Structures are given as structure tokens and as C-alpha cells.
Amino acid sequence: MVPSTCSGFLAPASAVAVQRDNFRRLLRTVEALSDLGPAITAERDFPQTARAMLSALQQAGDTREVVLFLYSDKPSLLSSVAAAGFALMPEPAIIPLLPKHVHALSSARGPAVLDQGSSDVFLSSNGNVAPELFKCIAPLKVAGKLVGAVALGRREGDSPYDVSELEALDLLCHYVALAIHNHTLSQTLAQRVSENLRLMASLHGFYDNALEAFATAIDVKHVNIHGHSLRVSHYAAAIGEALNLDSSEVAALRSAGYLHDIGKVAVDKRLFGKTTSLDPEEFREMADHTVVGHKIVRDVQFPWPQIPEIVRWHHERADGTGYPDGLVLEDVSTPVRIIGLADTFDAMISARPYREPLSLGAALSELVRLTPQKFDPTVVQALLLQVRRDTVGSNRTPFLENRLAGNIAAADIDHLAAGLQHKMTRGRLYLT
Image (cartoon, rainbow, N blue to C red; front, side, top):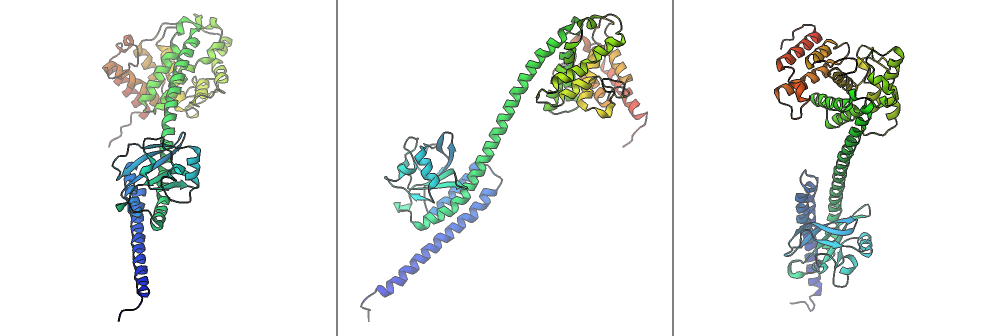
């Protein structure tokens, strides 16, 4: 016998079907989350991560069309980073936003279904993609701050998005928002680092040009020292390169070379042309250029903090016989040692009113003789290395003037280097 009403039998069947459907959707969301977690945390390019997120969003929203947008506030706009399913979607899709759109997206409590009347609440029609393509919009927010949006298009059969899809999408969007936020932070950081590097490069270039001109002005005191600061800068930078110092340290040496004698602007010009030895008072006035120079540069905010100590101490010597503070080798840094050697080397091979220049071989021999009493052996070896490279033509930029490089043979430099090594090891042999 058939019951007079079937409602009592149909209702339970309908409820079971709904529960089964909801269970499938819940399972689909869990599966999407399980796929999304590894995709977000994996070490891969962001475009790959974005494609994985699109796949998870399609699965959770049961949609065939989805696009992922990043939000930028200067100017305010959405720009797509990945899309799937849309037949015509520009790359990138750009949607400018008015303040009312930003407010609506930032205030939304979750995904919102769009129709002809509501799409204008969230999106403008001034971009290169029509908002009518989208049937659902899900703002992506981190700590209440808008970082992007997910826009869904049509579903199979053009069925509307219901509560279960919106809930699944909302759950997933929390993870997608974090991934977008992390990507934006890394992009911003990379951009800032790049901008800072470009700024530092231009700043170093500015300093290099300005200080080179300043060095020329310092050396104008007397014709016999013209170009001295420029050459010391060049020699010091090359020695630093031979010691495998990084580019910033080499730049510091170059700038310190330009400025090492800046205190000589306060020295009486007549002392530079004197053809006899300086008396004690004159020597003290000349020696004070280190202290005067330090006072000039110590409060200047250079990109290289070592410059003041180099200006003050480039006449200190390893055995404590230098000036102005009588420091020994261990008291001064490697940049100070390099500038001190470069300064002495250029003085030796340059003409002075009181003597003729030494030959290249004689100057190098004297430096080796004075090491390690006066100079750092490692720095002297680096100087010998650069001179040797000149003699065999392996330096991309000549270390010395061409007329000087031909005055000594590579074998002679090897002999000097071996002699210095012998001095430092006291003739001991180390077998391996």
C-alpha cells in the first residue's frame, strides 16, 4: 500500500543528498588545502606557486575560471599574476581602483557573489578587463590589510556560487593571502636592495669623480708632487685587488688614496720646493699634515668609515718609528698598511727637489729590505705581484706607467719575492 503522502519519505532522502554533497565539498576543500600547503612553502618560483594556488582555488570553488590579483596602492590597482580557464584574459589584467573600491574590498568579510549591480561596488571598468567576466570576488587580506584578490568566473552549467563554495573559498583565501603577502614583501625587499645598490654605485661614482678632482687640487702645491694622490689611489686599489679584497674595500682604498694627503693644504708651499733636508721644525710642520687631515675628514660622513684613520696613520710604520702616534703594525688595519706602502712606493719612484727618482728595481729592493721592520710583508708581496703582472702583460689595467714596467724583468721580481719569503720564514722549509 502506497502512503497517502510521500513527504515523510522524501525529506530524509533529500537531507542525505545534501549532506553527501556537503561532505564532497568539504573533502574537496581539504584536498585543496593539502595540495596548497606544500605548494606555498616549496622553494620554487612564484609563478609556479601561483599556478598551484589557482588549481586549489578552482577545486575549492568548483569553478572553471579563476584569476589571481596582486594589489598595489601606489597607484591603487589590481594586477593579475596568474589566470586559468578564461578564453580572453590579458597578461597582466589591470583593474584601477577608486577609493570606494579599495574600501569595499578591505571591508568585505569574505567572498562576495557579483552581479551587474554589485560588480561596480568592488571593481572599476577602467582597466583592460571587463568586471562582468567575474561572478565572485574574494579579497585577500593579511592583518586587515588588502594584499590582493581572487576573482572567479563561470561554473559548469553557469550555476551560481552557493554558501558552501564561498565558505571553502574563504578558508583557502587565508593561505593564499599569506603567500601573496610574502611574495610582495620579498619583491619589495629585492627592489629596495637593487635600488640601494644602484644608489651606492652612483654614490661611489660621484665620490670617485669628486675626490679625484679634489686630489688634483691637493697636489697642486708643487709641480713635483702633481698626480701623487691619484697614483697612490691607483696603486692602493690594485694592491687591494691582489689581496682579494671585496669591491667595497677596494673602493674605500681608492678614495682614501685620493684624500690621504689632504692635510697638506695647510702646509707652507715653500717646503715642497726645498732642495735640502727639512730642519726639525719644518719636518714637524710637514708631519702634522696627518693630524690636520684627520681633523678635516673625521666628521665627514663618507660611505667608507676607514678614511679618517687612513688619513691620520698612513705614515705609521710596523716598528713604531712612524708618526703621528708611533703605532706598530698590529695597531693599524690592513687599509692603513696598504695606503702607507702605496704612498712610500710612489714617493720612491717619483722625482723630488732634493733627489732623483729611484729606479723601479731599486725601489722594490729597498721596500723588501725594509720589510717586515717597516711594512706588512703580505702587502709588499701583493705590490710585487701587481708589478710582475705588468711585466708579463697580464694586467687588464696597467699597474705602472708603461715606461716603468719595462725597467724590470719578471725573473727579478720573482727573486725579490723569494727573498722576502726567505726573510719571513728565516730560511725554514715546510714540506707537505
